[in-house]
Amino acid sequence: MSVLLVFLFLGVATVAGFGIARVFSSELRFSEKIAWGFAVGLLLQAGIEVGLLAARLNPGPKKIVVTEAAIALAAFSIPRHWIPTASAVSEDSPGSYWFFWLIAAAVVLLFGVVALSSPMWTTDFLAIWGLKGKTIFATSSIPKRLFHDPSLVWSHPEYPMLLPLTFASLAAELRAWDDYAMAILYPIVQAVTALAVGGFLSRRVSRMAGGIGACLTAICFPLYSAGNIGLAEIPLALGLVLLSSAAIDAVEVASGASRARLLVASFLCATIKQEGTLFALLVAGALVVVGRRRGLGASRYTWIWAAAPVLVHGLLWRLLRGPVQRPYIDFSLLEPRRWGELVTREFQVVKHLLTVEIPGAAITIGAIALFFILTRSSFADWLFVPLGAQAVAYAAFCAISAFGAVWWLEASYSRIIVTLLPPLTLVLGARLPVRNRRAAEPIPR
Image (cartoon, rainbow, N blue to C red; front, side, top):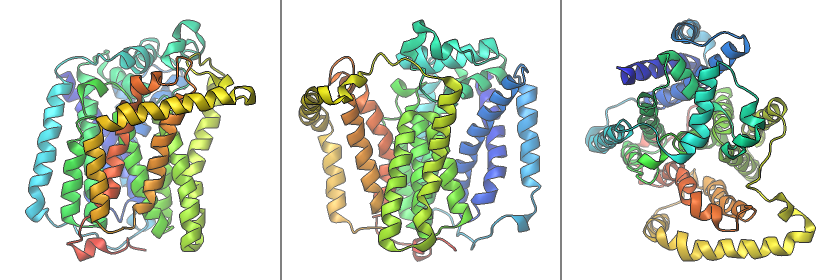
């Protein structure tokens, strides 16, 4: 019963988010609109939780659901002529590619069984995300000790709070901390990510590309595994996919809708994890270069819509949270007197990558390289740069660990790097052969 309630609560949030997303999603496919509605719904639900806590009101199902319902009613009451219009998007059936979507659905159901087979048990859930969420729920507040208690320093007090607030709001709606039921969030996010990838590729490339992209996203087993349930990697992958699709659209058409999607996706990434902030800034940098090279006029300033949300969030988060301890990072390695040691550590990182990480992923890397060689360039190829820079930045950052150059590599590099696979699937899918001419046309202006 609790699982159904969590599903219902997330559904209400998605409906409210869908209503808000109508303002900037008129040219998207319905599957994409669902994904954007879910993303906005998560932000909305967390925002309502924070608002209730700030007003010293105990969050509960009536307060949260009624607020979401009121927002949904207001959003769907917006007159159609106030919403930016776009050319109609073909919503034809999947046709002969339906079996790709069927496989994706079956894999999501399988992951759902895995997610509901046990409570969320991973170390990082118990020590970081679940600890913060349960503390917020139990105290009906966001206590300062989450960020400044020396005994909680290993819970990463610098991490953003969207996921803990999501857990806390779901628990408040259930009136109980039920980490069995709340685990359903993860297969739902998997399904939404597949919808986002499949819908974008169906719209911009072909129905075949959409079906294959959705299928490959859903069967990304290194990401959608029991070990990642309760962590931030699966939601982060959704944020990276939405940011990638928004950036690709915004490059070609600097419309208010495309910029709004870029802003929302950037903010979503920043509120999930610090890696999301990094990717948004890398995408912003790539947008600067792409806009100038292509001479896209107003699109030259599109990068602002990717960079501003993460910078504002970072500043506000720093002001509200205050400085925190990070004993797991040795920042003194960045000082000139220790640059020699830092270079040595970076060589150790490279050696570990060449001897452990890359050989372990040789088949996947080889398949991606072969696909890249055998297919033609596409409108999305420029995103390979921020995706590659993200992977390099992950590895380079490991060198300043206080526990040795390869400690983070061994502990979490492979888990973090798989978050790049869904957006990479989206970019590679843009190189698939085009079958649907209408889908391959530029997005409506």
